[in-house]
Length: 310
Image 1: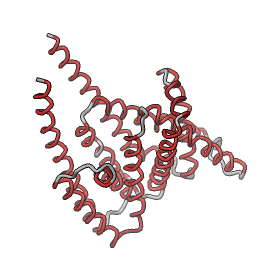
Image 2 (image 1 turned 30 degrees about the vertical axis):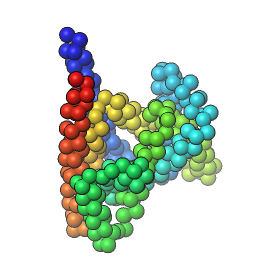
Image 3 (image 1 turned 180 degrees about the horizontal axis):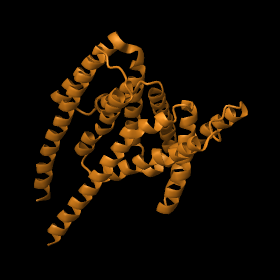
Image 4 (image 1 turned 45 degrees about the vertical axis):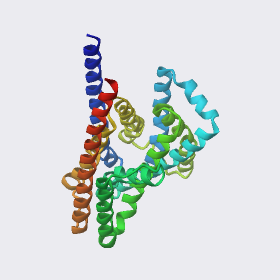
């Protein structure tokens, strides 16, 4: 009976984790619709409002969760603060470039960046964490690099967007992996670090008579909602990551760039060149190899874990 109850609880938690993860990535995938509605607002203003309204929302969440002692402890730890300073700058750069990509009708470049992200993360694991690559993983990375090379030679004007998004988020994930702080506390501290810069930017814009806030109610409402739009998928993702295997999370992460890709072509009419076709074909094949290898490795770990438990 105890084993049955434990199995039922684990299955319930997995279903909840899957729901949280799917919803998080759906929200990220549909995020360009929200950004398009703010297309008349400067990317720097959108970023600043995202930071400040996220801080307001996170303050409430942390108070309810009783996490202020953890936040204070992180603020007093010099090593943690240096790491979170770096991650704060990386995620701010990632957000700003993505906002610009959507506003400048370069969503295809943005989706490609997030398709590349897990492959870049594997590369960082190999180069920095000294993790071993399987032949399939090495082949997937080589194929992805070949696709990027084709795009660079033939349609490279937006390549900087793709590479900035892929490398900034992968490096962000790497540093957050080694930072001794939980996801909610880390996000709160990152937002606190960025808040003075965001407030300074908006005050400077207001002093120059170029404020985006207070011009019309719709824009104001969208900017205020930026806190929830930013924090909600991050919190859902954190909840999902605690309940799901890493391989499952690795598969779910392709929901968002797939939605962005579909929106770019079917809704916003972006043009796909032959270089894009070759590059995306290479990346999608590399992603398929990556997912299949993740599943194979997960199947190897599960029986080993079951044998150890027995």
